[in-house]
Length: 156
Image (tube, rainbow, N blue to C red; front, side, top):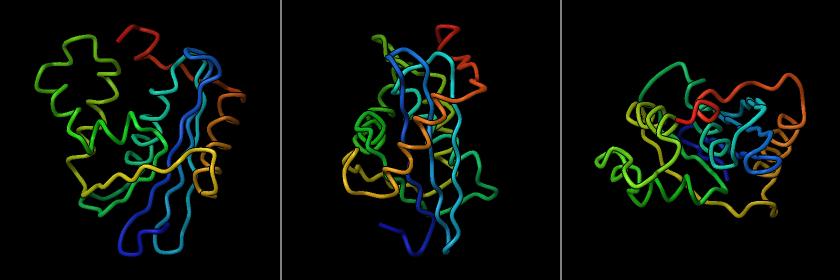
């Protein structure tokens, strides 16, 4: 599915072991143009890579106020935003052991700059963009050089 009047983003994250080596993949589609992003990390989690795929896509944008539809197979990411979990986590300062505060706060700052709607898609199914994001994420996790997920490795 392509969002005709704005930016379409597909995202996916992967981890080889959880925690383990990980990677993310994202595809941005804007007015017929397509851009792919990916990176691999030496030690991280699947949820962190799912979220980092969204963050990296948003951080690559050069202007604010964009109408965006983000497709993700991560219920963790989609529900955290669309069902208000993130707002509750921020309000309670991530009490109760909520994880990935560093990434959620990065996302939150980016989210406020755009008009974003999330759509959950079934992973490893018939969606070619989601499947391509999975290929990008797993290739990045298996590739070199692997980056350091500072937030994870420092215990944040």
